[in-house]
Image 1 (tube, protein in one colour):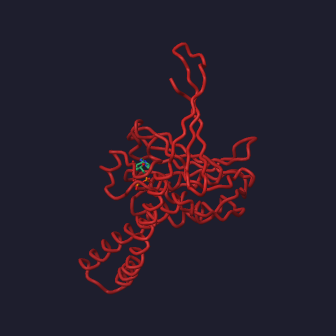
Image 2 (cartoon, protein in one colour):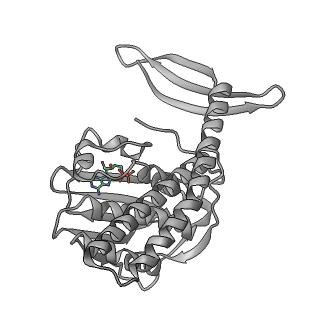
Image 3 (spheres, helix red, strand yellow):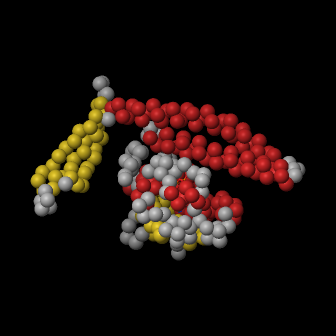
Length: 292
Ligand code: ADP
């Protein structure tokens, strides 16, 4: 039995070598420690392939974004014209489809940046309460269309300062809220709340919904790339399963953690923590190791 592995990465230049060293305990059948094993894996070629894959995605996504932005503008202009009901329906579905394509391209670009270590963060002190209030305002239309009621449970204090990259954190919070709306039921609810963790320099944000829930065997894999649970694929055909991967990377880069609790057909609650102390923010932004 080999348990409790620790992983460390090393690089050498000239000639280039990328090594991953895994150290594990060796435990015998009685549970006593027999010793340790170190495995050194040469990842030079693997990382070079990953880099060229990310570069390909980045260039393709960039090239797609320009024409898509033009299409988006075209559809939006048409919605302001005096059209017949049938024509307006076509324009609206064109607009929706283009919006989904733009979001997909943005997700692909973010993932390529994460994997190349180019997802740069600009930290500043922000008030989490007004920050989430603004995101909720932007989400109002989406919630209304889906017939889902949005609620904000604020903490007792007026302001709650955290250290964050505003743009990146808004991607993370919007992803969780969009999912809480998208994977909900008609007349459902989505509730976002903030609590200060007692005696610790962290706040906890939770996004709770009354939706389709997550099968327990899928819960761990949701945060990996392209993973979608079967019940979600059935309920909502659109989506490529990158949102939670991006969200987890953003939360981890803020020194926080993210997890989910869910009951199938009853609803899910996603939790994440954020540091209130700048010193808890990690200095490197290497992509998180995929956990299964
Ligand atoms: P996408 O929504 O594009 O599939 P995400 O990465 O945001 O990608 O989510 C990955 C998967 O996690 C979803 O396909 C779904 O299976 C599950 N999921 C995420 N949020 C929820 C939720 N609030 N309720 C139920 N399932 C969810």
